[in-house]
Image (cartoon, rainbow, N blue to C red; front, side, top):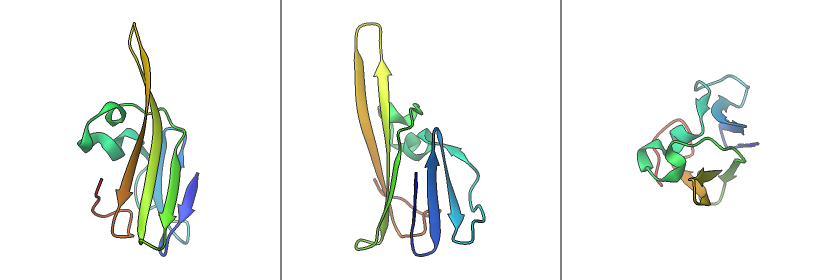
Length: 97
C-alpha cells in the first residue's frame, strides 16, 4: 500500500514503511510501523500488526498513515486503529498527531 504526493512516494508493506522520492530512490531506511506511533504511546506504539493505509490529502497538503493493531491478554482481545497526520507534505520531516 502506498501513495504519491507532490515530491514523494510513501509505502507501507506488511510490518514496515519507507519514503521514496518520485524517481524511486529511498529517502529513509525501512522502519517498523510502530515507529510512527512510538512517541505517542498507546496500544499501537509497540505493535506491528500491519493492515496499513497510506493516503496523501492534496487539498490539505498532508499525509495520512494508518495501522490496525490487536492487543490480546489472557481474558480479552481488543483492537485499535491508529492514524497519524504528517505535515508539511515532506513525509521525512516534522509530524503532528
